[in-house]
Length: 213
Image 1 (cartoon, rainbow, N blue to C red):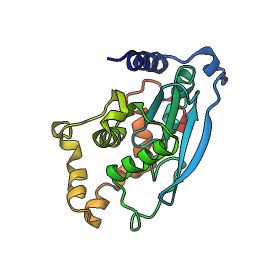
Image 2: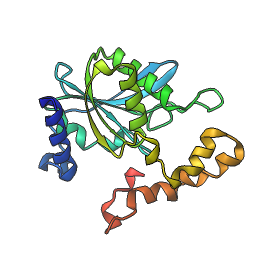
Image 3: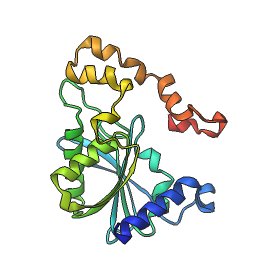
Image 4: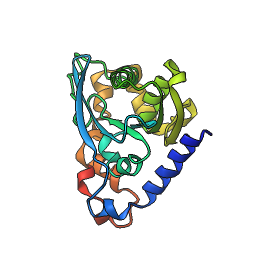
């Protein structure tokens, strides 16, 4: 593992386990900018921090969240790294075009984010990804492996065996995107289902900030 990749992994683990006193106090010496840019006619929102001359870390969020999930991690990395955390089309503060006019696919999302990286003039970067970030980040790597210096992977499936029975209704919709197959998935998009993803297994749900969901 390259030293920069190892250092990023260690920094992430430390940040995930506890926040610094400055972050807990709502303060940080590193400013996080909330930016937008237009790509293929879509307004894409992203968070950016750190010196662009430093190695870049691209943070790819999962479902059902956005770059908001990295709000505490970004200041932890910004001292040593240039950090980019985008919101995918349909997520966070990015545009949510009608599905009749836009194909929501991991491939399209990967292309949009590659164009974002190109626009920023970034030639090489490391990737932290989780959940939906996996099929996005892996596609970016498959097209331009020379640009990705390393991965930090959390819950990022890359193989058929990882998509077990839970995914059967979703696979059915992938194969046949009919109204019936779509309606079978709508429960995933309710507030209760989203709240469950943030509170399930938590001993004291009062510790979970509702801003998350």
